[in-house]
Image (cartoon, rainbow, N blue to C red; front, side):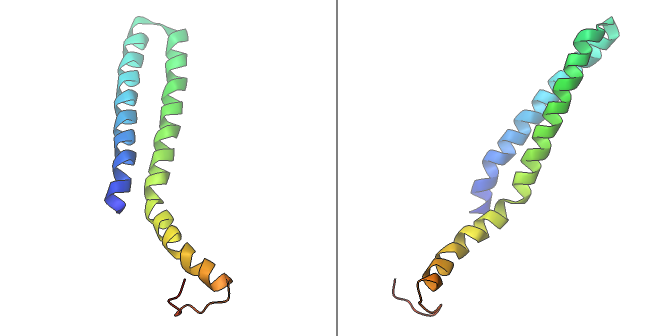
Length: 90
């Protein structure tokens, strides 16, 4: 189950990495030509992409924790209604 959840996150990270590489190449070309204003905008975009990658990495690291949390919820609800944890009736 964890691998299925990790695939979209991995695809999103790969997409962001490609985007970052594209912007880095464009930035290098602009700096070589002396386009300082456009280079400043690209640096800002690269910063935003870096933040997005950090967010994706955070989500990837916490996928399993979310999965465990979801599995534990039904037991907690049953106990809240006065049933023992070994009681198999709904």
